[in-house]
Image (tube, rainbow, N blue to C red):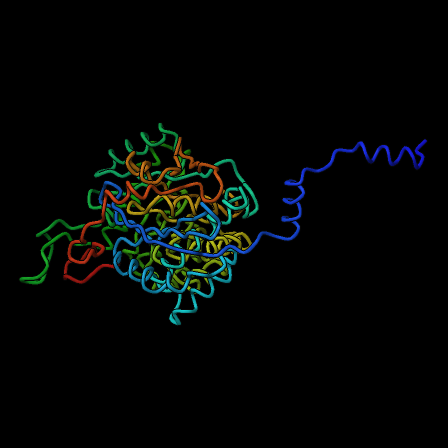
Length: 440
């Protein structure tokens, strides 16, 4: 029987919470103290290759606590560096690093003309660094702060191609042998638009005009489905096949191309139309069920949101850096989930490991995830950016360390400065027989 005397004896014998633990519990109840951005630096590097990478490091008032983000823009690199150094950083110093949402919107509106490509790169660098800081401070990977894992790893698609139908089949089979289930297949030796090029000097051209490789839409619409017919006949329907048109087709040809691709049960056809012609996706939906992936060159939510909410596309292909970072990417994923659309965040060969790992955290925590574009990096990049994610048998794995799980070796990065871009670093564009430009 518990008497008053026994009660006090029991209480006296109970273990006393250590002072440090009690203080930690009190801190958790009160919330963490303010965390001020004390300093910031821009780190650019070629990472021992031909990359033109730009990273932002935010240093906080808590000893040893910092975060990194990327503002990668291979075609306007110096513009992004200037925007970070001369515009964002002076404004950002002294701000509370805890207020990610507020800082994102404030940084977006402070330029007045917002959500443009350069501003989004700047926003993304800040946003990723802030999420990195928050995860490190919490002692958790960022995906835990986004709700935790919804899958064990992030499936990626491989990139293959062939100069003819036989070599395309061989490339697909080799990719399958390495463990990939999702495989993007391009055609011809001329990159995007392959299968639709008239050789240099051939064809009916204006006198004295353009004489290089010339893209022909109708040739492309005929050649690529014919290639996929052959590939499917040889490899069957086990691999999930993809193809990137890269905006090379105009309205009615895009509709016809997608109609012809339906028998091959594509996982998706990417960017069959330029962003200026997105109204044509309504016509595509009316004639076929070929899944559509869209958004690699989108930078404004008004471009991709109507396509999602009207269910005119099946995958959003935006780059996390190009749309402003993790904060808008997770919101996009939520809208996708509500409308039965999936994510397929864009990576690209010139992209960097920080963007890749930021996409990973959104991917692995979102029920709307569909696929992630692969990107492999050489060993020197893994030395410059320890914690770079790994792809094994078609799946992307992050480090699972707190924050983004990736760091930057500043001394090593400085050994590999970026060089001057040739002719201003333009993206290569194609032309038609008459010399007119073809949209990339």
